[in-house]
Amino acid sequence: MDTAFGVKISEPNLADCYQLSHEIRDERIAGIKARLSDRLLILGHNYQRDEVYKFADYTGDSLKLSQYAAQQRDREYIVFCGVKFMAETADILTTPEQKVILPDLAAGCSMADMADIETVETAWEEITRLIPEDTLTPITYINSGADLKAFCGERGGLVCTSTNAEKIIRWAFERREKILFFPDQHLGRNTCKRMGIPLDEMTLWDPAKPNGGNSPEAVRKTRVFLWHGFCSVHQMFQPQHVDCFRKQYPDIKVIVHPECSMEVADRSDLIGSTEYIIRTVTAAPAGTRWAVGTELNLVNRLKRDNPDKEVFFLSPMVCMCSTMFRIDAPHLLWSLERIESGTIVNQIIVPEADRYWAKVALDRMLELA
Ligand code: 13P
Ligand code: SF4
Image (cartoon, rainbow, N blue to C red; front, side, top):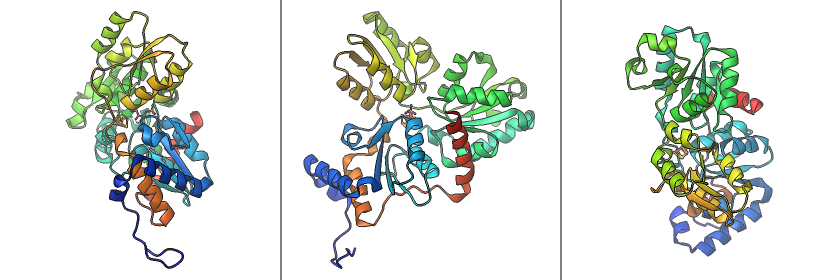
């Protein structure tokens, strides 16, 4: 690589970033942040590990981060410490001149991978063979590919997050009778149940089976089609974990993410997004006890930041999002060094074909949010 002075230096390399001590790595990250100044924005999801989270200019849940990304018109480089669907969302909501970078391209979301465009299109065809198309709204959880967001945008549907799922579903029911909700069955079921929709009006759609595994009669009667997707991290929380804490500490409050199963959600006191969980526990009076059902990095940080309260992790198992965990300080440093050297790596570019309709679906959500 040639520098501006014509001197040849090698391109910053990932392996070298792993050889550095924590102190040197931190110093280099801080140095690049200072030099790039407001040309750079580092976003950090609430599940990020501390070594990365501490460098984020702005942190939050999926909704907060996407709203913030949409407002930042002057940042040339947006380094997204999160997972791929979040970086794609930021790319869709920013200008073509801005570059969104995901420090490790292997940081995906296993739940988002449970729905793909081919199987969703097949499901749509199978359902609309049995009911009129104009009675069905597709809703995708933001944890999904840009092509699925585009699918929803093009068919009068939209995106939701764990913060606004109820508002979005209500909006859909004001327009049409039925919804197809993907990929997270739990967010769909927990939200609809809390809205008073009976369980027998919701049908699980298994894309591996013809007609999703349902009879034509069941399809005609269904109001809510729930895709057979789930987050394996949140399935580690079990109803007996809630029971156990309640037995030991009758005054404990249980707060969980809506990606948990219905059995866990129903036993909990409060349910909401990662940001809601942080806000609620942080605002709680000193001396209160909390059992928290979401990713471990977030819960450990909550424990540390709230020494006046007792904060427990709801499961005896380790529930970490292994893909979020892929973004570590060496990857962050490497991607920043490559920005500075002018040889950007891991830029996320949503294909033009998906961009327009995906933005329509996201904008519909953001207008409501
Ligand atoms: P939030 O939008 O609540 O941060 O959730 C994102 C996510 O992937 C939770 O597993
Ligand atoms: Fe995806 Fe689950 Fe990780 Fe959230 S915690 S990013 S839903 S795999």
